[in-house]
Length: 74
Image (tube, rainbow, N blue to C red):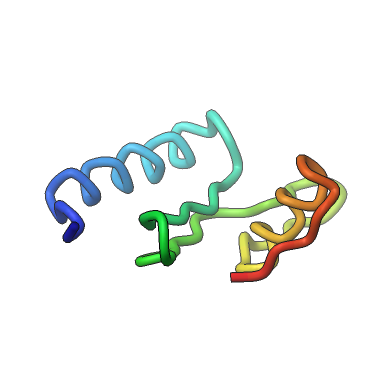
């Protein structure tokens, strides 16, 4: 199933607005289906204290590790 670019862009704008409004410092987004990750996007920062650290691809691995005690890598 192809990605609906209009809906995807609206969702990504929503995330960007949340960062701009300082609701959260950053986000990592993965869009996919049962068999593959189709797109990955990174916004803002994963940490702002004690130092600013940008959101990067390894944030997905960290999240999975803490939630499932298993490290995944895309």
